[in-house]
Length: 402
Image 1 (cartoon, helix red, strand yellow):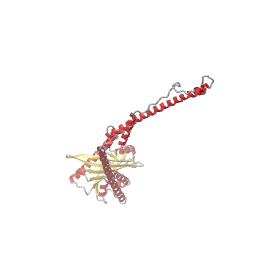
Image 2 (spheres, helix red, strand yellow; image 1 turned 30 degrees about the horizontal axis):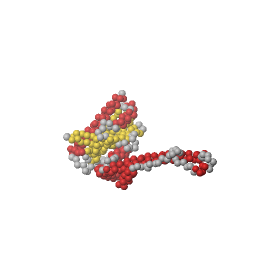
Image 3 (cartoon, helix red, strand yellow; image 1 turned 90 degrees about the vertical axis):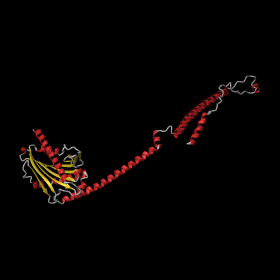
Image 4 (tube, one colour; image 1 turned 60 degrees about the vertical axis):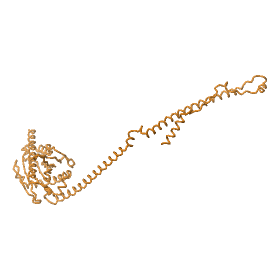
């Protein structure tokens, strides 16, 4: 850079000096020029007459000053052009020289260069890159854990399906399998949808087992039974009623009710299902004040609709997961709901329910009898709220039908 500056200084000194030599301007008239004359003795040879120049000689003497004048004009134009070019070069070189000096002394630096030349800028860049790397490593670890967890879910789900195909009773899952499955909403919902299909195929068998044919209208028959295969006690509720509404209106009413619009706390809809029209999957949280604290239950619900001939069946699969002091107290519920027109369709529609609820207790759950009673009492309160909502909806349907 010092060499460049020295060169620019020399150019500036050269341009500051007398840049062009003085030019002697030739004479413009023939009178000012020296005229070649013949010797007197030669003139005397023409019989004493005055000598007169030949016309061609005069023409030659006239053209010569003209050519010189043209050369002078071209020369002036060239000199003027070169002088202008040199002045322009002087300005450019002066400007570049000043820019180099200003840049070296930091007087004329743009903002981005200032930032790049500052140590704090590079420190900030290094810190930002380190944070980005740490975030990427954290995200990678999370994804790796998720992949491993998903692999375990798939493995256990395949085992569950395989076991279910080889046995006629599938009301409970193993302790370890539930512990892994319930941490993933997606796999729980997929498992419930498959269970809904499985239990729908057994609806006639279940209704025969619970005595639905002999069940009296408007009565609720509740019993506690023990599965002969799993030795797990479960609660069974059977109910049959006649609704004074047309079959189509009742089916529409019941299916809309599966959306449970009155449950909105921490509500999430799972829409990644194959048959969106006939499947609903969601989760929401139930809360209750208990003493000076609040307890909660996370509830996942899957409703699936089957319509064959003059009969619609809605399968409900519900998994209630205790939280906080209720942690480890989970409940699995399966509900069969059959809707069909009465033999005398003018009477309305027959609706038949069968619900089976069984606990899913983990070996790791450490609960007292009082905590278990509070948990069961909260589930009973939730069931009563659902019944009241159903009754209110039926009353509104009756008013709208009149």
